[in-house]
Image (cartoon, rainbow, N blue to C red; front, side, top):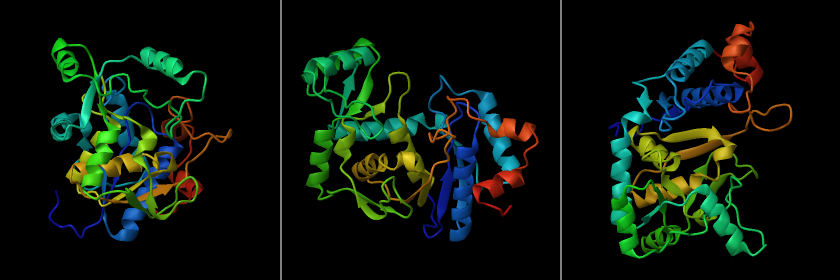
Length: 301
């Protein structure tokens, strides 16, 4: 944790599972501008917890692309894969509070349970559009959980949302809120209150990875002394989960600023998986970094 707490710190945190595109460029340039305006530091973090999709050439590509854009970062680059122990420590603290449980259910088993329980009615979904976890392994006997942990079967670790909210209530920490310096999808700004129950029992460690985005990002932000988080509006609703975990783990609260998304011609946001034009392909076609900056509204190099 930095000793100079008055120093504003921002971060750009891409995942190396594909080449960066214009949406990433916008986010990086937006964060660079915000750090400059605040007289703060700009840090780079590589979010590579997904070791099945991370490839060395994608990490190299990220570094090449941001260098080409003319963005300069302070301090050493943080790689999440070097900090699995830190995420494990955070999980252990939540486990001590009695807020976690293992879940070996497959996606197919979860879908089948939803069908059985819904009775043809519409099942509630989280803000990303995924159906809420139906609670197959919630509130099982302690012996069943112990057998799972000792049996070697791959399990996800889920947050028991009801117990987590009860813990927050005991600390007089409800309702949860965060400071939004930008705007959410529905123009939410200022002090925003959201109910974390909209996410259900979120996964905090995946079967194939000993952490999750939600857990690792709040641990990283605290470890790096991040004071200002800038990111796309698609992550606006995730902020309430991050605030929940920050309160439970006694971690500091950064200020949040969600920016607009860069969309493809069909109005969907740009995506690596959809094969949207990468910065590398634009560069190789002769497009200059200065043009990218101008087109995205950031002329200063």
